[in-house]
Amino acid sequence: QVQLVESGGGLVKPGGSLRLSCAASGFTFSDYYMSWIRQTPGKGLEWLSYISSSRTSINYADSVKGRFTISRDNAKNSLSLQMNSLRAEDTAIYYCARMGRLQRSIFYWGQGTLVTVSS
Amino acid sequence: QSALTQPASVSGSPGQSITISCTGTSSDVGGYNYVSWYQQHPGKAPKLMVYDVSTRPSGVSNRFSGSKSGNTASLTISGLQAEDEADYYCSSYTTSTTLVFGTGTKVTVL
Image 1 (tube, each protein chain N blue to C red):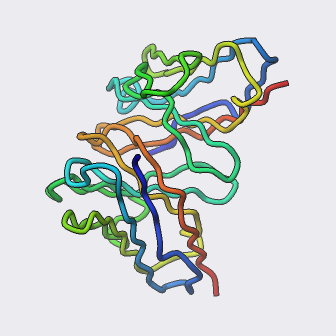
Image 2: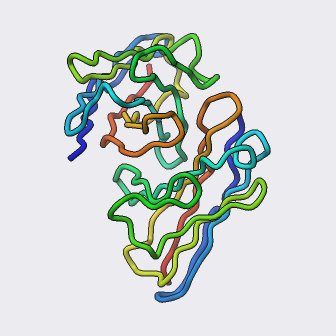
């Protein structure tokens, strides 16, 4: 079965950086687009970024463009999100997610990792 | 990219049918047949219920059905059950080759 396990969340000061990781298993990781999505506590979902299987297609939401960088290591079945210049409004649960062979939908979600940006 | 518009809450009695709407624009919902619906129980990760407007993943009950007309997509839950009480979100692919989510709808089973 598909498993996505996020790690790396925690408390960080405004302006700081954090790197999230996602360990994937139960499917051929190198075949699928992967994505990061966040959810503010008590609020809705916000798509952040996706990366294609071959890393040739990457896109970001305007809210994180220039501050966040998505990457993947197909040999290690892992997905990462480097987050720089963090702001209070980046406080959220961050989900790693598997898309389809195209970037049209989210098929599987991890359990999420909480990022808190506060002084 | 603005969030897709969903009603904040929808309720129904057990056995009834309810419909949740998801309104976007011609740049997202209306432009593609790539609307998905997700169910989220409190404290849990979302779960895909419908994709490509009306396709159910394996294992999802056929009580859940999706449709689209113009810039508005809909999720209908038939034979409402207590376990259907959750938050529901739609999403759509967009002309910017991004994804956009809906504002979310809380479904209450009376």
